[in-house]
Length: 110
Image (cartoon, rainbow, N blue to C red; front, side, top):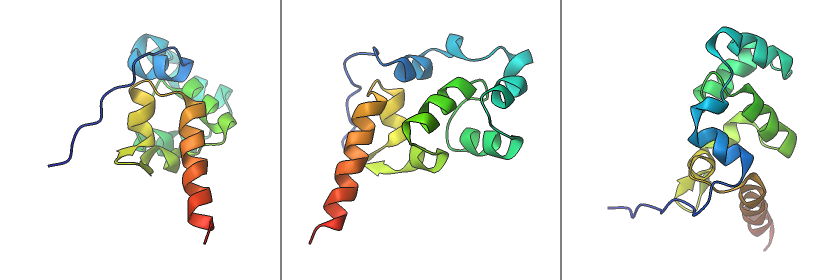
């Protein structure tokens, strides 16, 4: 049985806080407009939501996209957990990117 990773100790990262608290989401009446405002079309919105974001998290998707992640990255494995799980449990975007980049670099050596 796989061991459960413990949540990260703080939610000081704004993306982590947005995952933890749905009050950061766009109001239901503004959900579609929010995605458009942040530069996503309907297909992109649906893809981000299918990868684990809530419909009201357009701002979070923009932050992740601007940091260099795409929706598919949310389901990538990072040492037994997914990128999404790490973000949802308080690990910052910068830390997740470092882990992804170190994994990419390890795969390129040798």
